[in-house]
Length: 150
Image 1 (cartoon, one colour):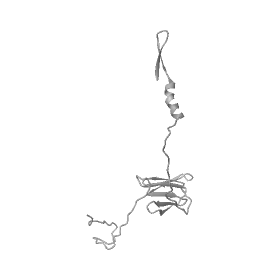
Image 2 (tube, one colour):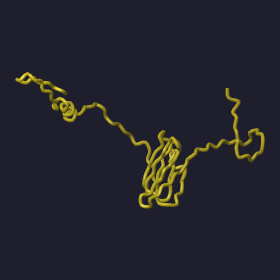
Image 3 (cartoon, rainbow, N blue to C red):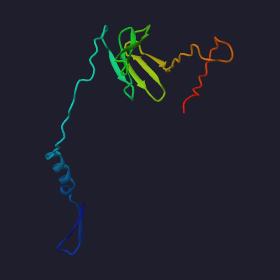
């Protein structure tokens, strides 16, 4: 804060008062906010793994947990409560990250100076056995229309 002092000669001397700047800082450090909040936790899931995990990352919505092992990425589904898929790896990676927006797993290896990007897509299977259809029965694309819902 800029302060002014009138000298005996009649001149005005301006100076900064650092103590006024430091007081709020010292006060905040000396007396941290006291909160009545308490962290409450409970164990939600416990999973026995057959491999030693090197790294773990979770999707933003908590639906998927990706577990990196020395030779694979295990995909754990929270909805199913079990490992649903195993993505095999051919090289040794030691770090794992996930981008939910672009649906990519990014694996890196510090010792080998290597990076691998795995694109993920969720494919929903719809059983159309016995349903009426048009076109080839073994077509690559099936469009399901649910028109009986009101």
